[in-house]
Structures are given as C-alpha cells and as structure tokens.
Length: 266
Ligand SMILES: NC(=O)c1ccc[n+]([C@@H]2O[C@H](COP(=O)([O-])OP(=O)(O)OC[C@H]3O[C@@H](n4cnc5c(N)ncnc54)[C@H](OP(=O)(O)O)[C@@H]3O)[C@@H](O)[C@H]2O)c1
Image (tube, rainbow, N blue to C red):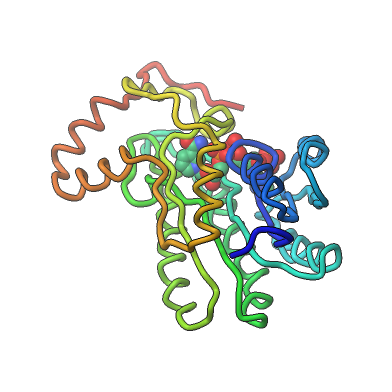
C-alpha cells in the first residue's frame, strides 16, 4: 500500500500508540483522521502534524461515532484507504472481584468499538476492492495474565472476531492485520479501569509507542496476518502453549496482587 496521499483513520489518536501512528503516517505523506474522546488532545496533535488531516472527538463505543468518522473522511478527502482500530481501555482486577459494569465497558470499547469501525469502513473497501484494516489486540488476547482477566477476555473476543473476518475477506482484496503488543510505554496502565494493586516483579518499561507505530506502518505496506512487537511476547506464547503448568507457575510468581486491596481507581 502507498502511504503518500492515502487516507487513514486512526482511533485512539490522542495518546500512546495511536498518536505515534498518526505522527508516523503524517510523516509518510498520508492524510489521517484522528479519533478519540479528548478534543483538546486531538487539536494539539493536529497542529504538530505535517500536511492536511482531520480530527473527530467521540467515543468509539457510541454506535453513531464510526459511521460519522467515515463520512468525515469521505467529505474531507473523497476517499478512504485504511483504518487502524487502536483505541482501547485496560481493566485490572482479580477475576473474583471483577465488576460486571467494568467488564461490559471494556467489551463495549475493545470489541464493540472495533467492530463498529470495521463495519463502517467495510462497505467502502469492498466497493473499491481495496483497503487495509489493522486491529490492535494484545498478547493477552492469546494468553491471559493474572489480574487482567476482564481485559484479556475483551482482547480474546476481538481476536476471534478477526479470525472469522479474515476468512470472510478471502478473495476480496481487503487486508486484515492483527497486532499483538506486549508492554508499550503509554498512558495505558495509568488510564486502565479497576484497581491499581498489581505488582509485576519483572515489569520492564516496555517499548516506545513510536516503535510500535513503525511496525504498524510496515504492516500497512505488507499486510502480514499477525504482528508481534517484541520477541519476548512470542516466547511467552510459545512457552505457555508447550509448558502450560510451568507458565502458570512463572506468571503467578511474576505478577501478584497486593492483599490489602479494597480501594478502586476513580
Ligand atoms: N500499552 C500497552 O502496554 C499495550 C499492550 C498491549 C495492547 N495495547 C493496546 O494498544 C491500544 C492503544 O493503547 P495505548 O497503549 O496507546 O494506551 P493509551 O495511551 O491509554 O491510549 C489509548 C487511546 O484510546 C483512546 N480511547 C480509549 N477509550 C476510548 C473510547 N471509548 N473512544 C475513543 N477513544 C478511546 C484514548 O483517548 P481518549 O481518552 O481521548 O478517548 C487514547 O487515545 C489499546 O487497544 C490497548 O489495548 C496496549
């Protein structure tokens, strides 16, 4: 895919991976439609981007948002070439204490919002017989970590949705790539729902969001099925598939929950 003059929607563009993607795409000459809830953040980002771009402040879990974003792309630029379904929210809580409202909110954004984006762009892509969909999942979409069960369930559901979509798109010239980041430096951990009582004994700072953006740009050009952003994440998934008991033991030691937990993050 040629990025120069391509029109690309990026959800979750007000921070982290989405903002890095918008910046990288603009530097490659693409027109970006940046979507997130925080308007002032989008405005500030737009002012830093070279070239012509559009912003839309809205919640992707609102069914009206993504059709409006696609209409904005068509009226502003007259075409649409790709979508990066990146917006997402985390949820940290032991399964025994998960609040159903939080799980539903997580599902509404991480699955419902992505589904809405895909359904909004697909008629255009199928009609013009081209288009790329990049979905940002997570390694926990394949293997859950402790205290991430609610979030992992949403990313697991997203992965199965993408498995089905990929088969349904065969022969259509519409490409689907699923990206499975591990830990990335962003606002994700400070913004996630639930309680902040997880202790990771081996927490690494994670890779910069700009590095993930570079991998996403490559994916837009070559359309791989799956992208892992770190070799350690591939190793974790391989190890957990081959040695599940050992993987559970290691993860239980690496990631723990402070027992005095009763408070919840706002
Ligand atoms: N960081 C990691 O370690 C990591 C690892 C694996 C996967 N991921 C995935 O990577 C994606 C990006 O995360 P990130 O690390 O860049 O986190 P981030 O810095 O917290 O950014 C999340 C973005 O999503 C937007 N967003 C959240 N809820 C939204 C909603 N309901 N409607 C519209 N926009 C919404 C946020 O903007 P507003 O608040 O302005 O709406 C923000 O722009 C997510 O899907 C996440 O699950 C992250």
